[in-house]
Amino acid sequence: MSGRLTSSSSLSLNSLTADHVASHIGKAEGIVAVLRGIPLLAFPPPPNHHTKAPNPASGLGGGGGAVPGGAVMLPLDVMAAKGVREEDVLREGPEAKALKDVVFEVATRASDHLITARQMVSNVREGRDVGHAFEHEGEEGFEYAYKGGNNGMERENGESGWQRKEVESAFGVYMRAVSVGLWLQRLERVDFDVFKEELRKREWRLPWKAWLAYRKRMF
Image 1 (tube, helix red, strand yellow):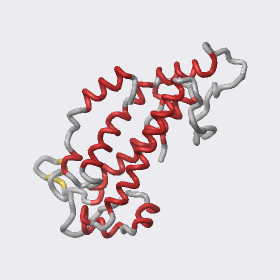
Image 2: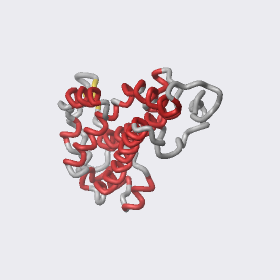
Image 3: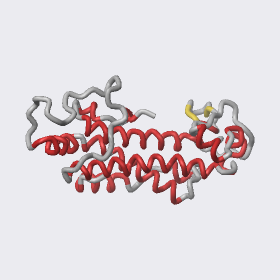
Image 4: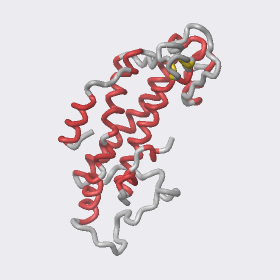
């Protein structure tokens, strides 16, 4: 899953470190999008002919047999490891055996990406190495004018100072991690049942949490 869902390229930056952090946040965001979409993709609601819009109260949750056109977009390797079949989810919805185990495993991957991004920012701010190599370095769209080291380009305060500057400049992009983290917390509170109605409600804490994160420069 591409980390380019959230990228420092949107800020016209050319920093491997800043893009590396954004890549992990983008991957977490993409995973959460998959989890949030499970009820809608597995049980697509029929069109509401009166409003020309889908009826969100219809179809979600299963229990009435498979819905035509339904699909489960969870990783096949995790589903196989937990013994979950797509047809079981399409028939039984939240009652499908071991579905919560799959959701937990996938959500843990998203959480791990957020933890990695936070640790990287902390390392850069403290003048330490970011921690691990950028897996997309060298791929198309991931070329950088400055990768660290002595390439003849003068950088104020040295490499670590330049990295801190780039990471701070990209912090607005990193703010997307706030909503991702809040949704993962809500998922945990409902015991990883992605069909719970409260997971589709507006997160009233988001404005406050976003303001606090920006003020403290921590996501």
